[in-house]
Length: 300
Image (cartoon, rainbow, N blue to C red; front, side):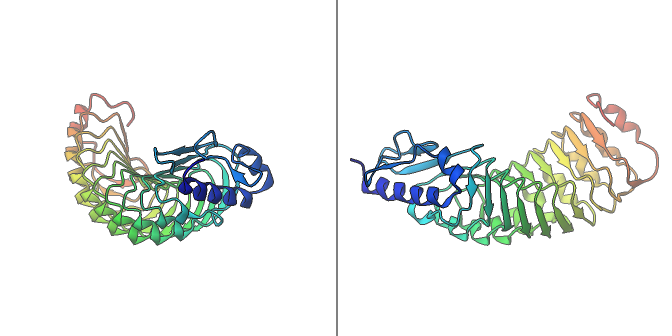
């Protein structure tokens, strides 16, 4: 015997399993019921982990060729679910707004699937979320403003989708963000100066988009940044001299934009820099002698 909670959760899992395409169900053969009594999902159900009270806290089913949608997944049935990793399956359809019922969720990875439609704004209610990976799907529409409510999020990974519209200024509220990857989308407009508030940011990649306007001088506040990649956009204006404040920087890629003016001498202060790409812009003037201070530089 096991708790009624587990029984309810197990029933919800079996309902979802039955909504998947037949071949996918065989991958979940350990999710079974025997003569109308359901087996305990905490014992040997693939990818399922429980807490001591027998309630499901983790679903980890990666690279399992699951085909189907999340429409038949009863999010309301999993009050303690903190971790979902469905990386590299063949799940499709939209991400249901009901995902916001998972109030304990800390980790969500739906990368390398075939999810389409928009990111539901309700995702902003998942205020315990620390990791949100949605890369390499067919997601479209804009990044919802509500995402800025996820203020303990450390990783927001959204590259290689079809996201358009502006980068919301509310991203500047996500002060615990360490990794922000938005590259390979169709984002347009300006880079919000509020992103300069992301004081814990280590890696920022917004390359391969349709971004315009100058790089905000507020980026000079991103003191922990090691990677700054903004290539293949239509950025204009000068390279801000404030980037010289970012002493942790190792890699700066600004090539293939419409940047103007001269290379700021302050970049010579970036003593940890190993890669500096500023080619294919409209820069003028000579390379400042201070660049000679960059003894770690391997690629220029």
